[in-house]
Amino acid sequence: MTREELLDKALHCNRCGTCRGVTQDVIPDVAFALQCPCGSTFFGEYEPSGLMYMARGLAMGNLKWNEDLAKVLYACTMCGYCDDFCQRGYRHTPAIEILEELRRDIPQKLKPKALQKATDSLNIPKGQKLTVLADFGIIDIAPGKKADTIFFPDNTLMLNAGKLREIGYIFQKSGKKIGCFMSDPLPPVNASLVFGGCDDALAACMAEIDDRLEDAAVKKVIVYNPESLSVLKRNSKSDVEFISITSFYAGLLKSKKAKKLKMPAVTYQDPCHLGRYAKDYAAPREVIKALGLELKDMWRSGNNSLCCGAGGGVLATNPALAKSYAEKRMHEASATGAKVMITACPYCLANLSGAKPRDFKIVDITTLVAQAYGFSGKEGGK
Image (tube, rainbow, N blue to C red):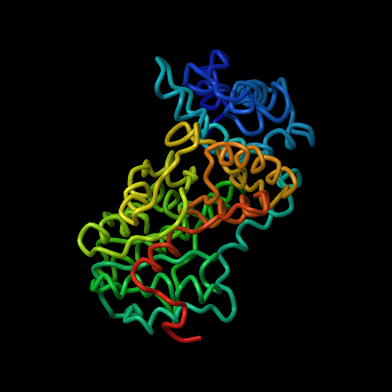
């Protein structure tokens, strides 16, 4: 993107400030009055309109990159609320596109160290456990093999044998033929490449993924991590359909009934990359209903949901800041009266777990679906 193009996009923002707040007329708690995680924590320059002014200044040459600007840029979780909300108005400011451009443009030395090494996320962990899936009839897609539907595991899963067993068990119960690149995994792309401004690495990975999906005649890819899902949907040039694993569960529960779970009322955290980026708000709630659970949505939910605070690389680059964002969300979760929060994102799970009260539980939706189909934890290899 040229500086002229950046300026043109940034000029769409008339700094009305509406995206700072919430859409509801009556606010039950003053703590819920603002929406942007960094904007409600700091000052005006951290708000979406402040970030757009930063883009203008940089594009016009009136501002130069320095540590202060970098601090503001990397406090943003890239949750997408401002962008999504602005699309509901009369003139759309493409805030996410602008913020992604700023993260490409910023000098490498000013990036947080964790994001300077964003391409490390592409490394396949030594001793990865994907072959656990074979215990449940999942097919290893070796060269020359074909599969209509495959599973895409990210690097939060590759060493997590317990979670892989839960997923393998659910796939086995579905009765569907599902494959996975186990012995030679696909590049585990996620949003850290976007947050780190690693366009070349991302393009190379997507080219490889598209080629290998075409070679294996894949038509559908089930994706566990919402960040991976949003990156694949936005960047793949193939005709493959990418769906969230939560959508797969919702469809499965309609065709193959599971037992109802006995739990107190629950609340649900909408992951930003599953909701705002992938536009999948309904499936998780369909799953929760099918499991027989009472859902008490937080006041800010759906497309008005508040980010957990982990996004934009904040959890990796500034864990203390990410925790402070999460504490705001947990305050709202506690206000529902629920003592259990369900989420469908490993990063939401990690960040919110670090900020929850002792008497509160955070649960992955996959774990609940596996339990509903009878998973005991002893199935599959060790």
